[in-house]
Length: 143
Image (cartoon, rainbow, N blue to C red; front, side, top):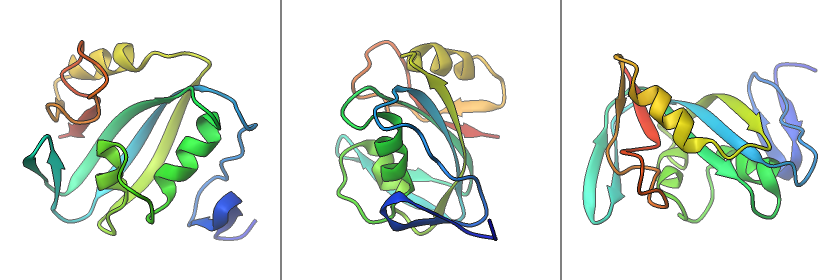
């Protein structure tokens, strides 16, 4: 394949691997996101400013469509806001630089806890974990 790979739903990734999961395959994933310029997102009626840099988001996909559907959604810029992370991934100032996957395991909290213990990784409080009462965040800044 050339510089660009065309994948389902008309998404271009330049350059990068094609995401080709079997429909329905489930698991936990990590998005490695670069924010190129400051953006502001709203979390529980408060504005959170995100500075340029590299961020990590941990999510899971155990519903209809599984990982394939969820990851393709994250890669699209045009979508309705459903999750906190949608505000980040919709922005033209952001780019998903990489994706990690843990198949068939729901281990978001374990991964978030691991990242929380690393000195140069800072949790963005209350972002990405609205369905989790155990974690401080599922969204982190790498410093």
